[in-house]
Image 1 (tube, helix red, strand yellow):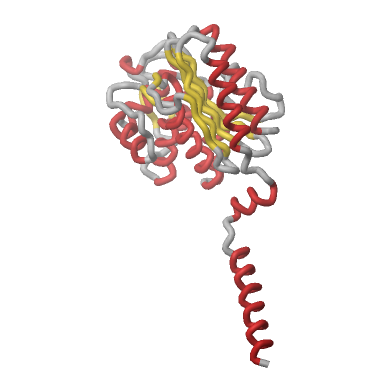
Image 2: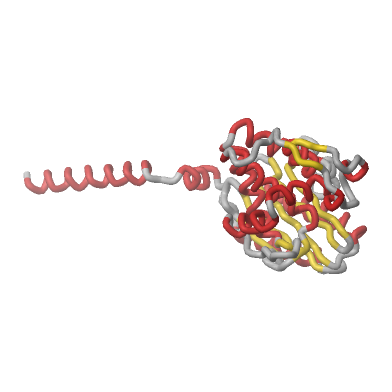
Amino acid sequence: MILIIVVIVCLCRSINNRYLNIQNTDPVQSLLVNTGTQGDSRAVDALKIELENYIKNYKGQYGIYYYNIVTGEEFGINEADEYTAASTIKVPLNLYLYNNIKSGAVDPQGTIKYLKDDYEGGTGKIQYEKVGNTYTIDELSKFSIVLSDNVAANMLIRFLGIDNIKQYMRQVGGVVVQDGQNVSCPKDMGLYMRLVYEFSSREGVLGQQLMDCFLNTQFNDMIPALLPTNIKVAHKIGNQVGVVNDVGIVFSDRPYILAVMSKDVDEKEAATVLPIVSKKVFDYATN
């Protein structure tokens, strides 16, 4: 009789332990186990080698960072090296702005006057408009992302304070942040884009407004260029002499982040290299 009781108690404990283990399983880990989305390390290593072999054939240096939002899988190539950010700096700029709008510190309908010192050529529409015009903060944010408007970005930087923006970049985990220099790295840019994704998922209408800007940028000749037309990409380019960058979220079945930055490159070559890098990553991520 004692032996039978001991066996029953052991069985109950075993069943209870299994139940507790199931109840305490992390939802994401459950997804990985049940669907096999965690990925094969050999496959991602093969992709990394393929990309390394591809980019070494071209002038200059390319940095690549990949992060799968569903599985947490990531890899990088030259991903922590310093690169000129160019207009990709508008990602953390607007992320900081939207966090201030969320907290109530900034009124998106407040206005800023266009000053002579805000002028910068390149992309955008405000450069062709009259100095002294006023624009809402909401307008400037949209212009800076959708049109990559440099004057709009300069006006927002003046309003928010460059030191505050740089401090924010460091606070959220940015490593390549230099005072007085517009620099970053693919891994940091991937982090900022991940925070955009999280903000948009968490903050309702305000979050969707920010994401819509990145989804509707007018410059789609890099990360999205060779992807299927039904795949949405929220991204921000950044180009200047010897520099071609793009960072974005690719909304495949398992959304992922891709950041590609470069230095000392041939811009015409880079305009081919970045889309091919993006397509190779897409083929891997959706396989």
